[in-house]
Length: 390
Image (cartoon, rainbow, N blue to C red; front, side):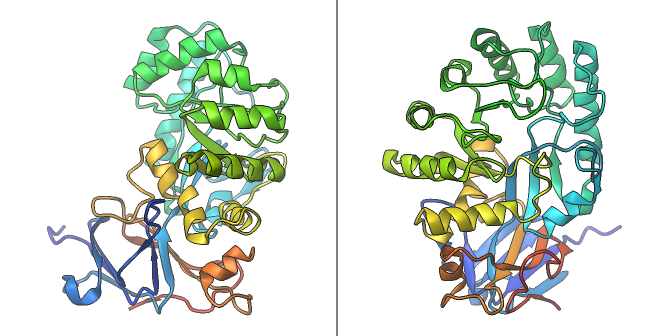
């Protein structure tokens, strides 16, 4: 054992994306992290870069906060029974995603719906992802789906056991706004964040959740406002954008047209800081390792949003709305990064211009808590340049 701190230095960064929607590009070419937390950001000449335990030459590539998928449905380890697929989380890491947030472990075969069973599964799920990070990825899980029969003490018990999330309201037996609001309020009282299913039914047992119920329930996150998979009518989406102070979540597995309507409406309302991104996978549409990158490119290109701003939807916006210590490039936050470059032979003069034309970047490296977790992505188009671990 040693008391010497782990010191990560990333130098020769070509472009720094901050995750902050008010200032998406930072000045600087170097980041220093100590024991997995960012300690300094700026120009190499001005920073203390001596005695690095890990030194990375970024080779002029772009560094952004590690991407955050705000809406996934994990089950156990790196396996999804919904698609009978192994290593989907590792594959997602290769899409630049370093943090996943559960919207409920609803694909667990035989998922218990009695109060004792659902609490037990939520606590167990929170524990196994706290104790085991697939490929280093942070998985915030243990998100129980509320059911009739739950009382305030149940939410207190869950919170005291470490549960910090609710699964999608509406995927269980509670489907009326009044009951859901009471339970969401109990959850909030004990520090548990809530998400609601929005739109038409997605799996057997779910149902239509319209704008009125979303507004009445008052969850912290409006889950897949663009439908998962079926979106609400346009007027209801506009109503939610206008009436909600909550996070407005756009997902890959939803309606693309409704996603663009949400983007355009929030832009007109000055609410782009409320937009966050998820995939809503694994699901019937499968697993989407590049889902967050694809959403960024789609919203940037078809929504006429600067690529550096679109990256904020999948990083800093989510960090702030979800109260995370990752997703922003600033001292004190976790040293979770994705290093990218313009894909080989892709059009555009720069990586940002290429993304705004709808092209995916190439991921060259991911880092979680100051530790390199992957090198050149096996899933993205090949990056023009890749960082070097020296």
